[in-house]
Amino acid sequence: MQKDKKTEIRKKADVFRNGCKVSHYGIIDLFKECERCGYKLLRYPLGEDADLGFAVKKDADIIIFTNTCSRLSREIFTLAHEIGHIILHMESMTSFIDDALTVSGKSKDEKEQEANYFAACLLMPSDDVGKFLEYEIEDFWENGLSAMDIARIMSEFHVSFDMVLNRLENLGRIDKNERLCLDNERNQLRAGNLLRSVGGNRHLNEASLEVDIPHEYIDYVIYNYNHNAIPLETLKKALECCYLTIEDISDRLVEHSQEEEGLDGLIGGLED
Ligand SMILES: [Zn+2]
Image 1 (cartoon, protein in one colour):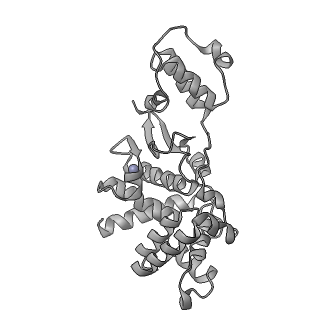
Image 2 (image 1 turned 60 degrees about the horizontal axis):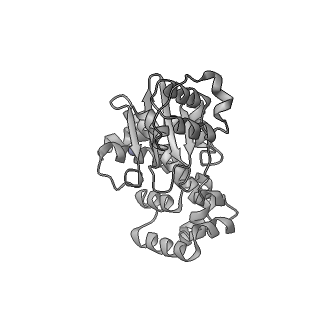
Image 3 (image 1 turned 90 degrees about the vertical axis):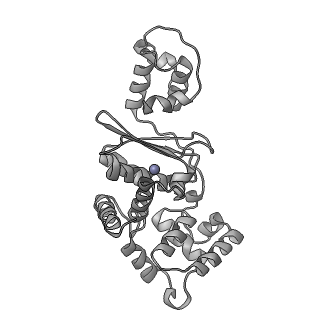
């Protein structure tokens, strides 16, 4: 990525971050920030092998989906990546679907790399990472970092162990060898145990399996059902996510019959 492109992305990430509630260093709750920005956020446990997230512009709405079968730290990164697409790319394209390839940085696609860079700058800005190392890690200059220190950074910035290593290496705070050693140390101790031992947020390393669907979404599903765009089975499943049954909304339904389909319609309907 070109240097001036990087600077531009960093600036935009800073502007977004300036509106966010930050604790000492890290954004407290990126999910809540979506509400502040007027994005419609959908969180649903779509399955471990399913897509990780998407961002779609539909009429005046911007909808973000994140799969809550991911570990929470990964889900937060996916969310930051989707916000990146919205801020950087939504003028030219209206939908982005992300899987393990695009979010891990393995995709060569320029927009995917830009969204990942935005996410890294949003979640772990260079200045704040530097301050954390200097103020919060004892003996950083003498002894460098231990896996426990990485867990402390994870907990403050709400990111994964791998994301911390990536970011520190990209910022020139650790070299390849140190990274390898920290990675080995983590493999022996496991990130969940490390988080526990530093009194950090161990939920970062677990899937939240959260279901969070805005009420407009239900209106949208009912509208689609009434216009024959989704089958009854999909409507029922979408309602279940919100702890509703057909009886609860029966006065809003138009009568018709249709073949049954899978859960794909729940998400597929949004992408049209
Ligand atoms: Zn993407």
